[in-house]
Length: 104
Image 1 (cartoon, one colour):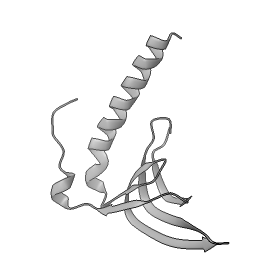
Image 2 (cartoon, one colour; image 1 turned 180 degrees about the vertical axis):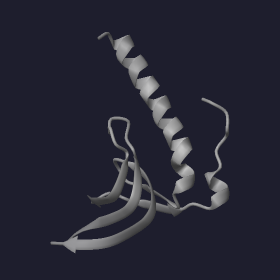
Image 3 (cartoon, rainbow, N blue to C red; image 1 turned 30 degrees about the vertical axis):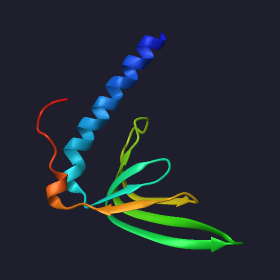
Image 4 (cartoon, rainbow, N blue to C red; image 1 turned 120 degrees about the horizontal axis):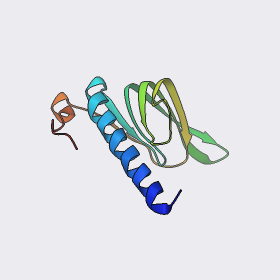
């Protein structure tokens, strides 16, 4: 496989992922961003934990969709993330969920 073929494959996969996101975003009420992933979910619980002076975040999400181009199944009933990095959680207003209807 040439590098051009690989780039084309990745571009097509990214476009398919965006289209899937556009189709499912209206099903969710929260956006969660971690260092490694972007999630849509309907329930999120963030707990700040400490162990030996180190502070970390224990994030649990229910009814989640994972933005990950290499994941064969992006829907998950429960997701748990433990991270030492920042976690951003936003509740989406319904007006924010409307995306352009055009095909990209």
